[in-house]
Image (cartoon, rainbow, N blue to C red; front, side, top):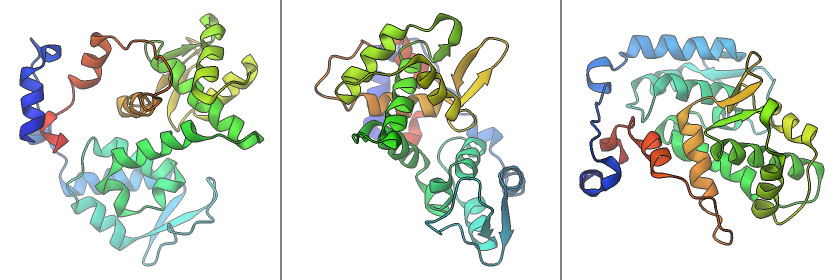
Length: 242
């Protein structure tokens, strides 16, 4: 924590910024957390019972899932990192996170980064690997386009460049790229039919993409401006980086 605070107060990136930790005065009480979690469980076809099956590795994304009352109580009583409602959404909509149970809420950002990294590391020539590569390419495109993918002003040269540098070559058709974005709606993205545009569901998803993208040591990445970095960090409660 001390090293994080030292970086915060000595870096010029944060000059003139004031960070307010709202979690102290507006933290959800246990009853509110349970209500939020139960609502997300209901919306995503997950029921609560004495003996859940959420650890079953064979679960399909649309399969009915049960989670035990014990896990619910553990989650509610846990002092979670980050926004609890967003963690609940990720936990209930992405089945590999659901299977982690309480461990997801202990390390939600790590779980999300691992999931994004799995897209980046896809290196096969089969259809599944191509879809994973296409999804990561779409996420990186958004990251480098002010966090938005607009259908009406798509820079497809940028798309091809990202795919080539991130995955060692290959080509993609425009409809395949848009299909990849569509597949991530309600998972990582939202879609506005009024604007014909995709947006990140939450800022922590964009941050996970940025971290994963930065792991490519062999390419020259477009420079992410200090303003972008400032936007990513100014609303975060820094003491939580312990």
